[in-house]
Image 1 (cartoon, rainbow, N blue to C red):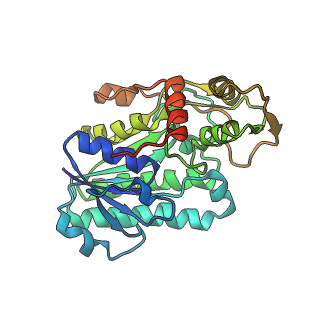
Image 2: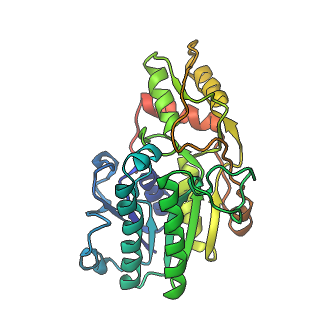
Amino acid sequence: MNVLITGGAGFVGTFTKKALKNEGHNPILLDNFLTGSTANVQLDDVIIKGDILDGSLYEVLEPYGIDAIIHLAAQTSVPASVANPVNDLQLNIEGTVRMLELARSLSVKKFIFASTAAVYGNNEQVPLKESVHLVPTAPYGVSKASCEMYVTAFCEANAIGYSILRYSNIYGPKQTKDGEGGVIKIFLDKLLNGEQVSIFGDGGQTRDFIYVEDIARANCAALRVEDGIYNVSSNEEISVNELYRIMAREMGSPLEPVYGEPREGDIYRSCLDNQRFLGISSWRPETSLTAGIEETVRQMQRPEKIT
């Protein structure tokens, strides 16, 4: 398949490109390089510099015979969404609607939308199933929940296959500090520099973290599953305090963290039930948190190209 990846030069896009190539697909990358990096682009990559808000993308992309779109490009920072919700609305909601219109114009067969655990908000029904009521607590989660409804309604009305993937907190090599799983990147940067780590709140807040290569394989698996909404996660809940202990032990750091005020819009407890996606696909999360952190540290110390 010829697969367009929006945000193709970004963190998740780079690993998704590699996974698609491994399965024999032809990835076409779209990125405006505001957060994506040219360092993630290889000489043999098909890369288009462009913006998801640009209404003239059809003319550029039509010659490539796009079969599917994996829509990763988005504003993913919760604090940024609180500070500038209008920007969040434009990039996430308008950007997604424009990609849906592009999918219709290009007659694509499958639209995969990258959603988030943030749509669930502070919900007590942990581990969270796809069927629970959505109560997002920050503009970022609100924008992604809105996009989910647009994707479902638009794709069903236009006979486009779709998968909505609600990712838990992604981490791994090449990550920036600004995304949802950025806490691991932030902690590692501090520990590598021998600096003390700051934790918002009491550290009892929980997440489930998933390695970026597992997410990339899930994006590929989503090309083959029936239409629907799926949690993609490790299904393992861990507190920020325990996460710090694992990372400090890995780095050999004796430093204790310092604690500050809770951050506006943050969810206290989050863990996603991944059984639905496991039941409908051959995908499984393969990388443990400890192994993933070890590999992330190794590549931070000795970066490798993602081909």
